[in-house]
Length: 159
Image 1 (cartoon, rainbow, N blue to C red):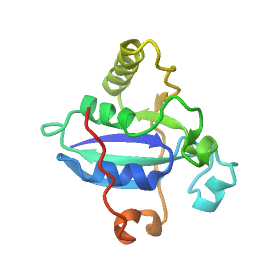
Image 2: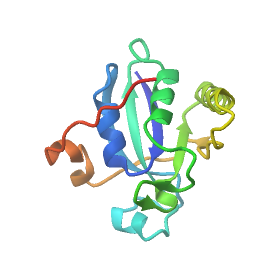
Image 3: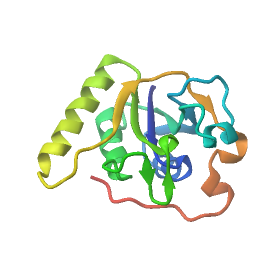
């Protein structure tokens, strides 16, 4: 088992996308990358904690690689728009890869460079690539939000 942590806007949608992928053993949404301990959703929304809404993924690297997760991460949101995803905007909605070791860091940096070089017309990716910090699980009502509310699965075209 391995762990990946990503921020890509509102954590509800990104969780729904990742939790249905082969090789994903579990997902949970929460807060990370900020400066306060045990933040609540209301505190994160107050823009005083510095935390991002994020997803923590436990995956089987024999079934799905970290590289593949990163490609899916970048395909699943607009990583060229600073602190904004759709109607959500502010620092908590930033695009970020929180790496757990040097190998994840190098893979993320390399793939980011490849994606930017692939299309010269593509705006630069604003995704932060930073060390993972403490991940604080969000409140229970945020976990598997779309499934709890019978919102249909958001299918994304795989890279």
